[in-house]
Image 1 (cartoon, helix red, strand yellow):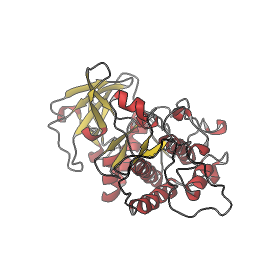
Image 2: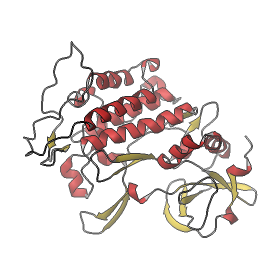
Image 3: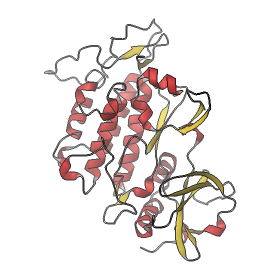
Image 4: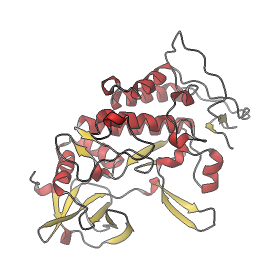
Length: 346
């Protein structure tokens, strides 16, 4: 695939580079003086180490963004560190430009040893119990914010799928979250996007299955939109039932008192051994949008927090006439004096 003028940039044009970090594939630099006509946010440069770059796969990934309309491109730019340009030096592709991760997705504070901490807020921290989060200096994320994060991740997956992209290796570290002061203020951002695959092409690097995030055995060698949905459902389950064993959970019953019948049906279908029976990412996004609209319309009254065994109200929505009411307690959510549902400490 040939690159257009808007998909390639010479390394000499990047200007001053400020080192940020080094990973297995390459080094990351900030480009403080670089301005691009089609990208309004700060930019980072990833320079690949020798043998780590398959430029033909990356050409297809960069071209996905180029072909998008303005609305889709804006959504991608704010929710993924998507390759914006390939970078060439002396006639050879040596790296790529991508969005710089905003500070809102970075945790700044003090570690348990008292040293300064600056760490990307990976989704793995959503799986921890409240006491562990507090010890690590990470914020408590209320249930409404978790619904927002689930919707945001489904939205960006739906966007990628609409443009024939398979994300592939969703895991506990390659998506970040942010939370704000508002009751439902939260969002998500995908990282490591140079490993995605455009259907009909080879990915720039092999698409993997991180341990504890594997799809069914028959689907592990060729990742698809359906395996993306399977892994997304693992995230939903683990995000909405943080605490003991959440990071490896696969049993939908963990959230039987958090999701309504529609949500439970989507979750069960997403874990189907038959890929064609799984819902789409767009269906998940629509579900969480309805759920947030319904729950957001109910303003909880300020009241003393109930006992830690009391479960949050099941999400509003159509209830199955044959469903057995979920017992209170297993989720471990408690209501604060301000009326927010947060994970019980312990």
